[in-house]
Image 1 (spheres, one colour):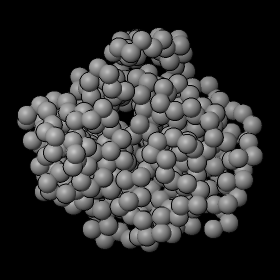
Image 2 (tube, one colour; image 1 turned 180 degrees about the vertical axis):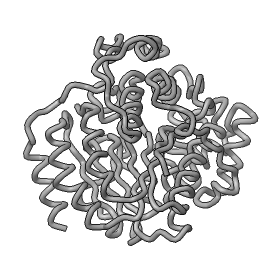
Image 3 (cartoon, one colour; image 1 turned 60 degrees about the vertical axis):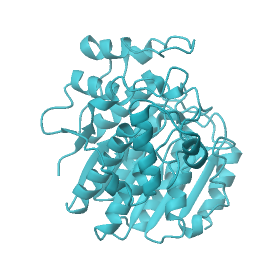
Length: 368
């Protein structure tokens, strides 16, 4: 199965609202930049299907799914929806595609799981997926559905018995942990910023024996990420011998992201994927967080370039440059991007010391 990119036009112009961090374009930028670079030819791109309500019931409460649909039709949430399902809040607003957009992300990840479960090997990139906070009966942390849980459940239903999940987002995957805590068929590894919402995924949280969670300090750099990759992520994935691997590549661990205080370059993600890819015959790579439109678009495009075997360009010009130059914050009063964010795809390395906090916490996890 050749590497496949799943996208959708529903992401173009779709926004959580002018005051929300997800007012910025993300997946549509990756589609446009990938096409400008010639990386999305016919046969490598497919439109993501939209999951039907019955499919979402695999993990989500039918009453919650119905409430999402009703909120989209009405254009607002009732008091009951806010109280019971956390819809219509500042974090989880009602916007015009409040059901269709997350159902498209869920449909893409579930389709990828179905396709790979019946293939000997393959790779699918779903940048619209990665909503790791969604809970069975309510929205949570900008996530209305949990496509990751749904995708992993599809893999398990199709007979796979060893699924590894690696989460590189700046925030802990609380929704995924809630679904698979104590399940020996799923190994979860999350590296996330300490002291940041949702304030879960502590060093001593074992998720019933299924999880290895590493909170990292502010300023987490490429050198530290390499130490974590070789000291925790790769050994724990390799020893599990996964039949399928799901990697969440939330872009909010990058230096430029406004919602975290980590300092990675996008090279750290590419290095992680290069190490992980040989460890499983089936690979699903998802998006996730990421609130700087330039850094998230560049990262997810570079990831697709790596997965599909393209050489990274030294400089961007012509149509590719224009895609990035046309982006904006869509309000919020933030400064314009540094020139490199318009002219390059891959960041310069962001190396630094490996601090004691990182090595001590790695030692705790290695001892398990």
